[in-house]
Figure 1 (cartoon, rainbow, N blue to C red):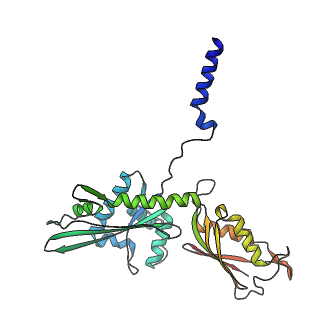
Figure 2: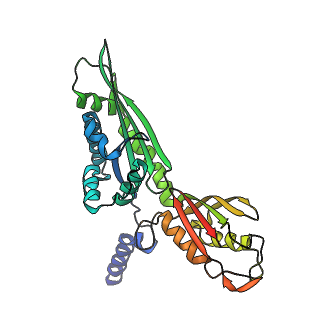
Figure 3: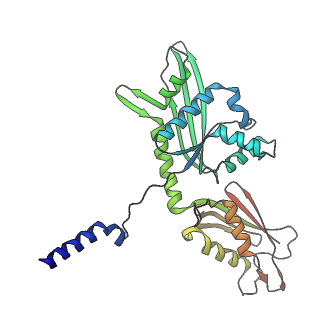
Amino acid sequence: MKNVSILFLLLFFVLSTSNDLWGQEEVQQIQPRIMVMPYAKKDQDVRTVLEDDINFRVAISKVKEGFDNRGFTTIDFVGRLKAGEVDDIFTSDSPSDVKTALIEASGADIYVEVEAHTESSASGNSARIILQAFDAFTGQSLSNKTGISHFMRHDQYDLLVEQALNRKDGDTKISMVEDFLNSMQSKFDDIVENGRTVKVIFKLDGNAWFDFDYETTTGDYLSDAVYDWIHENAYKNNYVQTGASQLSVTFDQVRIPLRDKRGRNFTPYRFARDIRSGLRGITLEEDPDSEISVSRDVRGGTIYITLQ
């Protein structure tokens, strides 16, 4: 009887801890950090758009509220903007540079641009809301949705925006926010699993005395050394090489991880730094005493590596 009791207890322990023993722990979905911001035209400064149009402030507030209700972590655009001005991160008067600096300083994985329009007719007033989500580090589009309210005989813009985001046709509720977030989360899940995509272009400085067909001291062509580095360091060896010549080597798609081993954002800048470090020290057969100089330039999701 005593042996039976001990066997029962052992069986209970194994069953209660089987997830840990067999590696079947519950996997939680990783959700991105999102900053909701106003859409700005090419010549507009994102810092002043909200000040000029109250409709934008209402629309952004409603969209952010919808994200918060779904449990997403949102970053307050106005708060981040004020913090950036205090920290003096805006070193350029170019609207595009200001926007880039703000996104980079926000700590967001994704930024969502909100475009808001009003329309008036004999039938009343209507609101049109356009949402676009982008990867904060590469600018890759992740989701796009448009919501339009019914024409209503009032000018309460917050109610029009609410209806554009959660419209009802008869008894059917069409949630623009739900559709938008589901599409965005699906794309983000792919980034979590397979990494984000960047483009890497290797080129030569105008004063370089060599080209990519020169042999290194290891016996490989210089282009082979570049190829081998990408092969070994692309996330899950996932990359696509689209061109190679004596003057350049291009990888149209190279996957990099979303986070590093310490849980920090792994940005294109980090990958460019790794490339620079990885290629430093290469020497050519014709001049084995001189190492190749490597510099990098990152523009959104494209990395330019220059050898000299």
